[in-house]
Length: 428
Image (cartoon, rainbow, N blue to C red; front, side):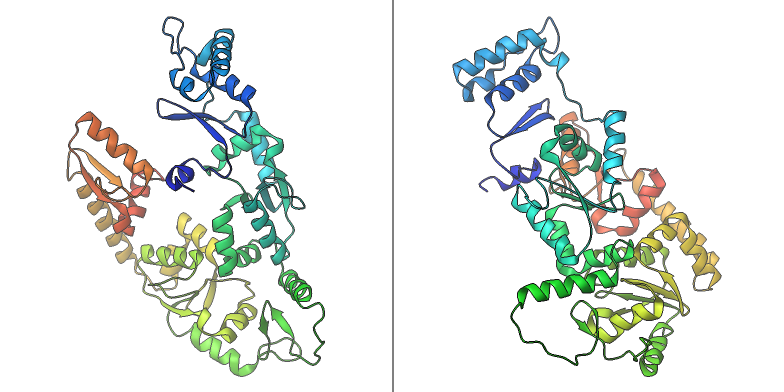
């Protein structure tokens, strides 16, 4: 709590925590107060890097008592120091294969401290509660039971802390992201879209939560049928079909523009990450589109799911035809199929596609050649917005190199275009 930046940088969720760093590289870590293990790890990592160059673990002596320090020195001699004990940041093929199997062992998989019945940390408990509220079936793995999995998964996922939640083999996030998605409804939408949660399951979960909260509440009969969590159906006929007037209204909305996006929020202020991603894709495709905020009209929000037979948002329509949701659209964008659809539907001209490609490519080349050394980074050299950019700036300055920079956070077109141009997926 007193050092939040350090805690965040190293993924500290419990204390005491020992982190072993050498030449600015994290080599190992140890949670919990275990002097024997601490001495053993320090001995292996603080020993001589080569036979003729000894490195005494002087810094350890400041914190450790004389007995522990002597033990460390003795163990260092026995083990031959760091040359036999350095922990690398790469995974063995066997461990990577095992992690892949675990991640895919259940459609929804939670790597946590403890078990769902007995969580061993508050963050794990919160994620378990969120999953139980949604009524989704999930598998779990107690990372406290296997140190190889615990440390290996951090490298595998490039995520430093636990719990970690996966859906169909894809990392959704840790505690904060999962809870935020749960609050906004994105988590439920993701599970519906991935086919791991049925609307019936959501309804049952909502009824269970309501029942547990209102165990002794009076029973009220003759209420309209509940078709989604917290939403009452008054626009469906007895056979479950859409009311004709609402169907007409939906068709008018869908066909109001050649490209119509039903989303949470607006293109300028998306209210969920999935809507934001689709807006970015459409902007990259350079197509004109209109949008409808489904949070502003609950009838449209619920009944459009029936009309499209698609359980989540956003939903994209082109000339009245439903194209897909977030995952489908991102895949189509990646493989070029979305652009082909726009061209076939005559909402995007071939000439404009070629022109935009040429103009963006020309722009990227001009930026790349604007200085002998150019750094594409998050933020500016004086105010980096990510630690990776900060490290590269520090390295260039240490080398005494003059360099220009481009803040990719200020230009989404450059940010995405440069990934394709360089065939490199990340920044800086």
